[in-house]
Length: 380
Image 1: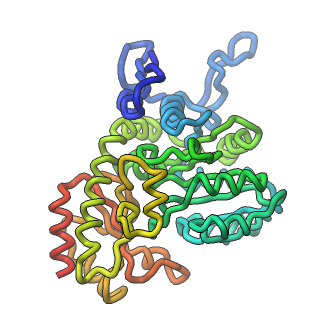
Image 2: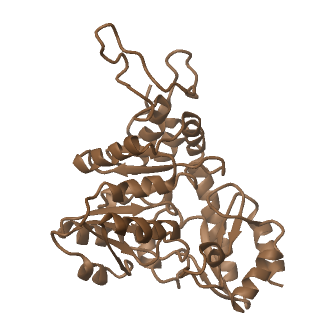
């Protein structure tokens, strides 16, 4: 039995849309590892399913829940956030013009530069936080996709989704939003005019650092969406049934996890924004942060669990700081229950545009006072 439409998103997530296994009455769906499905004597598919590279029963509930949380028309889960993102670009045609922000997840930027341009897409970067610049960069009749990331990784730059949606649509393009940092808890890009919402579901949606996954939600089931779905199947970018099951399990606690992480991140940002050994704290929840006004308008209930700090003394001081941490873990990724810190410039390599003094902090579910104390002692 599905839940009524009127329930709040947190209720829909906690009950996974009210799922009950019709065979047993269980609240938790079974894992279905089958790769293929029987046809009837008339050669018709008995369940409507053909092969698990195209579809799997364990996708159904997680995709339905994400569609509900994002206010979209349909969702597809992928084998990773990168496979979800690249499927959107691969659904375009050689020669199409694409606008992307100058601050963007480094792995996606590397793919765009190293592969998408060779394939024939015309990629142009712009400061997406300034709508006037984005408006001047779009090419009516040529631009097919405007891709934004808000808050952006790792500078937390904020982009006005509604303004960019209007710019994209006026040029005949679609707007896609990487909403990994914001999550459906804080932002619903489709309600603000976006056509597509992408998540690295590895992060907050799963929330336990034990699944690599991605998702794309669409505002409309149209030809472009069918191309994205076909790319998932034909390129084999599919999520395993056990991983889909784990993803759904994680999403049931999404709202309580993200609320706690955002609350702690706000406290940490406020504490260290006045620390004498910190050059700057980058976090949309700070009133002095550029983009705070836009973030306050399009985010609700908090500003997310990720912040970055720039340490006085450059890279040596930043690296010394993370070497002295005792509670924060030095590791890649974000959105899990454990707090992580990473020197992004080191990870991204010599072509990185990330400031060498920047540390990205992903706040977990530890006590905020413990996290603050650990940073305090590490800063000396």
